[in-house]
Length: 342
Image (cartoon, rainbow, N blue to C red; front, side):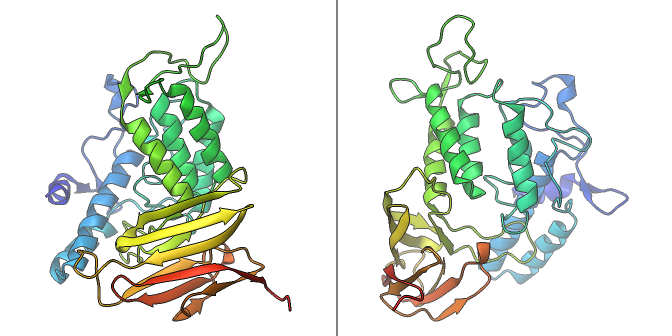
């Protein structure tokens, strides 16, 4: 219904690209007359692409071929994805000063419209600009959002840096407080010029999600006319070198997979993936599991069952192991011998 409403609201410009009659970017220009931006803002472009792309993906899953073709046609008229960065707030309006809301970067996270292997330069330039403009006018959720974006981009050190800074916006009771709560002497500068105490929940929630993004990712491309599978497991994709020993048990990945893993001394030593149990909504007769090699390049892991195939050319040049699992079946990999050693 949302996608149908948007399809009725847009018009085609002279280049055959969808335009809205009015456009904005959340919290930019603070509800003044200038908050109305020249259509389309980067935020609105991302939301249009996400709505049409997700409607198309749902139609594909439901076997509604005609609907899928119609949404694919709408998607083809959206503003093309950017190839250079950093992302602007709108055409001719760069992110030129510190601001609490990264609405122009929502396509990076959480929408995931810019997969890191295809748009690395755009993502890196956008995050570098946010970092360079400083945090003077950020609130607490800005820091946890930045951490989650950095984790999605594989920037483990930056993700941990901003997650730790977020703690300055956390009260003794664990609530996220919009303002910087770090005690400081008169005239001493903190992380933000905001020092007030309104509390919200999204800062806490996205901080937890930032940790999840550091430990496990399983996204595929969305908002494209040929969406890629969403169960490529990236295990410890953005872990800081300061996290030498880290483990997680039974985190849920796309496709209903349950994933557990452990790192010791800065090396991945164990990975386990379990398919959905029979009778659960995500269960299939055969679940195809794709794992981006989580072990160090000089390690030959030992797997509890051999992969169906091993593909080359994954992200960062790493291999992709493909396994077929039955309902409730697991596959486990453990650190083995150094490659090339006797």
